[in-house]
Length: 404
Image 1 (tube, rainbow, N blue to C red):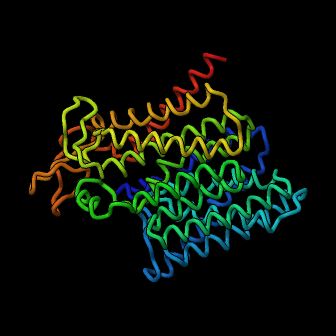
Image 2 (image 1 turned 90 degrees about the horizontal axis):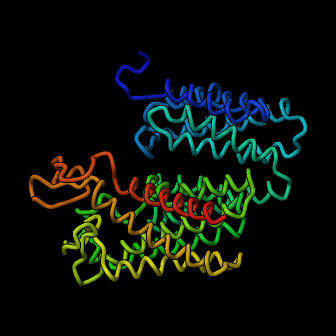
Image 3 (image 1 turned 180 degrees about the horizontal axis):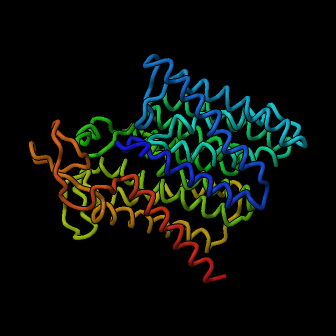
């Protein structure tokens, strides 16, 4: 009744956020429930009013909803003020009030700009409470590392946007993930994901003249947006947070495997399309045109193998692997690559243009809606990447627990 045109699902997300906060913090420390809800009730609400009062001046779109610079500035100022006051009065034992306020308010502001259709009602209170919890329980050295990580994350995001590795939404999502990984994981967790990001971004710029032929085939270009960043790095960000909250060396192995799968798939695609020989569809092994989802080639497979090795070597700088761990990472990253290709050939939405008759991943082609030819319309390449990554991690976990 509040949103009869379904432009926003905020009335659904808010009670869900309240439920999550209660389940997580009720027995730990209820002050964080108050802090999370207040970010929604006060900072987010007042910043929305500030954004609307400024009208359409200085607006931007990261995902779907239109945001304003005035609203984002108001969100940061209000979040900072609110967290600063709450730390003073609700958490009198905390000393680094200013630094924690800066750290958390910056994150919730970026979370709010990336949210759409009312999802900020979920992610702002939950994300704000979680990062506040981490900041409050961090020692001074850990807090300094988190702030340095946030600065490095900002630097990487800005430079990547300037180099056209990332879109504006991709840069914002990279900032969030990099802040978590750089700040909570330190050098040990930072080097592998930088290896993936830098090398994969450089590969996306190689063979531009050849890859230009596939601009009408692939749904997205080499400039990665927020969903691509989340599909390839979201699991990594969750794993580093879990490791911070519940320390265990197994989280790092899952982290490396997740990056191995993401790198293997990315390198297979970026280098495979440059092959002069036609690839074969993984389900029938029939030759198909390059760029078709689910197609594999010797060149692409070898490139994926090289990509997984690059991640393994970056991890070996910090821990020593036994032979079983090394073979498991390499084999499962190869398996994850095959699962990704299989999903791409079977369940990912594949379309055909009704004008030029070309097969494509795009829902709009030749300025005309395309026709679904195979798979499911709601499953795109990002969801395929995320699903294959999760399944590979699940296989690793099942094998590990079975052996142990």
